[in-house]
Length: 407
Image 1: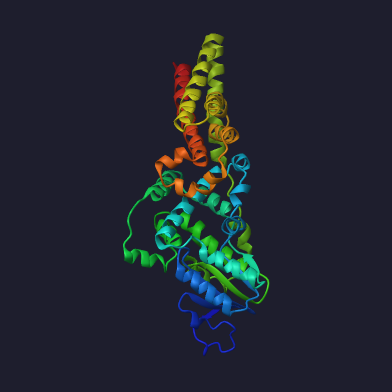
Image 2: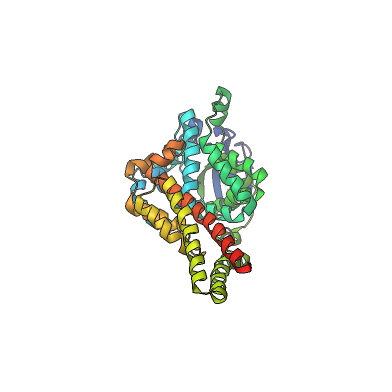
């Protein structure tokens, strides 16, 4: 692999990269020539640069730092109409959806300050490619896999810090100076934020940046044709340039897999329910069925009441609150499904968000009132608050039953 910035060094190159400035890199990989454009996702300069390159060049393929879901999100105005929330909840992807919304909200807010819609340069590249009948290659890893791998690799004690950082970011109202705004127009702010986070969470940087560098490079090399224009966030360029002369195809299976749940975690997940059930049986054997029934009732109320209160605090539908009360005592006895998923599914069924609420969720997420006003965000509150209530009930009920057993 080699890169060049002058026509003199590569006189036969169809991509004289030097004419486009420092954000464009010419890469030769075997018989393939790639013009790699590093962009900022909220920069008009990046939109102009992509437009200039693609209107002057005739590549065989335009490679984008997008997966299928993100491509649909930026190219289809009605993508929200196809969102099946029930399937999202059934597949236990509600956490991935909320993180996606947080990141979209962050970028949209910054984009509002710079006057450019997030991902405008990627949309521009896609539109020009379609107009010129150039093939489009989506080269980024599925965002759901990226988020699930990021969550799995984050140590348990750091997960809380990560969530707190994400929530703090969406509510941040800091006013930016003209100098900071100018810098935003020339930098990939989101990638920079993730890189900074990586200094505190190196495991996260490995998944969000390094693995995706590898994935994107291999997908570019596997794209059809010989001459490519690739549009990626500026934060990926340095890492990608180091990987074009490497053969990392064998790593794709590994970095697109979801790490399995550890045996220890599975054992821990089943041990608490089995201990509670076993304790109630032991109490019944030792003290009679009345004592066992009393402990079962305590368990039911200790789980049901906090979970129902959590759903009520989220302004859930009355039947969702009732569902929380009835479901929590049983879901607490299995790690397969939690009360939050049951309540979220019920809330979607009873009060599904309307289209305009789906479309405005990335704005509403940045205000406290928006979380309760927007039905989509309220579903997340129902999920979180009923889950927390059930967790509290599990500990309160479990401690009471264990004390009754040893006492």
